[in-house]
Length: 106
Picture 1 (tube, rainbow, N blue to C red):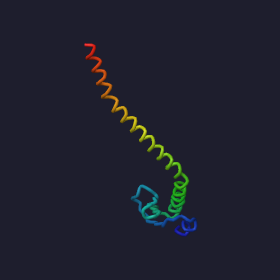
Picture 2: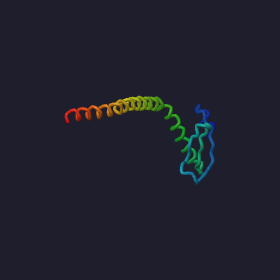
Picture 3: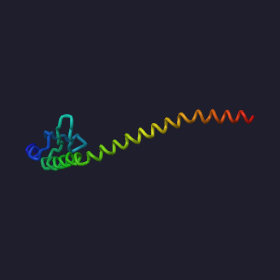
Picture 4: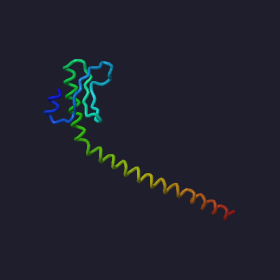
C-alpha cells in the first residue's frame, strides 16, 4: 500500500491498523501526514486506501473554492459588523431627537 502511495507522489505514510471499534474505515491525519486504515480485511483496506487517496487529491482541487468562500465570508462579516455598529450609533440619537421633539410639542 505504501508503495502505491509513494508511486502516486502522495506525501503520506500509510498505517494499516485494523480496529473494528472505529466508526470509520480510514482517516488522514494531516499533522502526522499519515493515512490510517482501520479495516480488518485486506480487500476492504485497499478500497479504503483508494477512497482516502481520492479524497486527499480532491481536497487539493477544491482548495481554491474553500479559500474564496472563506474570503467572501470574512468580507461579509466585516461589512455586517460595520453596518451593525452604524445602526447602534444611530439608535440613541434617534431616540433623543424624538424625545426632544415630543417635549417641544408638550
